[in-house]
Image (spheres, rainbow, N blue to C red):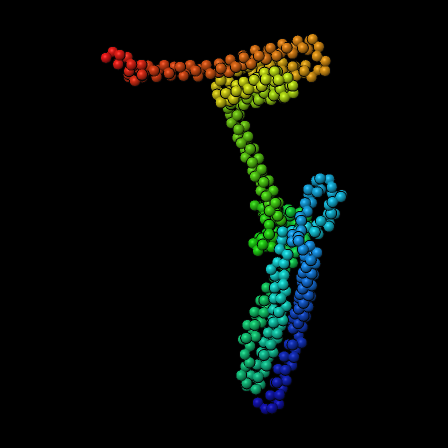
Length: 422
């Protein structure tokens, strides 16, 4: 190979390297790196300025209030309920700005993310640039001068590490940015749908759920909770407790509905039980109306009689509810005695409310008072009669048992007779 060929070859290689360095791809890469570095440096400056302002503000507050380490909490809702909102409460916008949210003030990644992005980007630019230049020089040296290649392994490794650091910094910065968007959107509300938060950050619901769970685990949201269906985010422990109470009440109502539905189905299948339930509910309504009339009676004597009536009627219906087979024994009691008794009680109540107590009213009231004594006595006898069959069965059992024990010589009287005979 002559000198002319050698020179032409070197010139061609130089032109190719120069063309590659000035190519569109390398230019765009340099512009992107430059823009990233400028943006990250601006964010560093802004973060440092915010941290300095907050520190100065806190220091000023501590100097002005040396004996008050924690500012008193303002109960906005209580102030609003008492009707003093116009006098003492702040406007909604000012309250939103001053509200102390249970969130981390400086989440992890606010500073480290910016630093990783800045230094990672700078390191990546330097490492990849050095690797590119070293590779170009090695190519020229090996092919033109026969010199050994320059090692580019270390720059490549550093370039990969710095690129990964820059990517990690960008990831941290984006997550902190989403966190700030979440906090800004919350305002004065403690309940937020996942769908609305997803629209705010421009992500899918599943992504936002995982994002919020990660932030809750890292204590960015100090009191944050998700509901069971993962459709709602709750900012405070108080709102989560309200949600749990509502869930318990919903479950209780659901169980109650299921119980009533099952009970209704059983009643439809069992006419006797259905009639029993109707009778018991009707009886409770009679007792409720008697009690309501009694509560309005100022006279202690008539009130005592009505209280006695309430008590005996309650016992009758409780016994019937526990012994459905005796439902037929109170048929007349339900069809005539109770309606007539309630009619007398409410008539007495109406007479007592009249402003003028004439002879007719006084006489009618006296007759009702006397009748109530008879009614109470009759109802008590009827209640006792409900146990007639039970008492008869008990007497029969006692008689049979006594006879059997006597035949076996196990009764005390039999022992006495045997001893006297000896």
